[in-house]
Length: 220
Image (cartoon, rainbow, N blue to C red; front, side, top):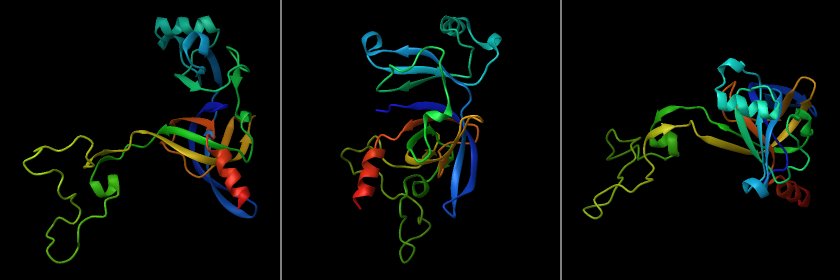
């Protein structure tokens, strides 16, 4: 499980020079992440931080949620997000989590909801190769083919890969390298692409498998 995490907002992609090479990066903005509640193993069965980010008009928050913020002494944010961590001993309610919790060169895992792409066929949605494009194939080049058995069981099994709505699901991209950290501006630049649209909420954690990847690279 992760030891460090924060909530950010995807700004977009750009590029920058690094070691005389052009590197594609995704810009993430860290909008005033504040700890609202600390969950412990003894009381809640697991360790986690409940945080909020950004600002929200207090008049637009319902009374139970407003009371939750008031008890923590934290201004209402856009949304409450839970961050599961191994060690929560160094955090306290009301604490601000800045972008400098990560360092340049560190590997991170980024989780977000991917862009919805609407209804898609099996070739685009599941990477099917398609049917033959030569003799004996008539207007079925991109169709999935047979989807069920014969009289027994006379139905299509649940989970069969078929056409349907694509995207709009929780996606985690692992082992992305932090290219630059600007704590004053609240920006985090990560190499490569990050799932989700511009303005989407993302959760950044230290890479779970990062140590294994680095060790394998050093062995080579």
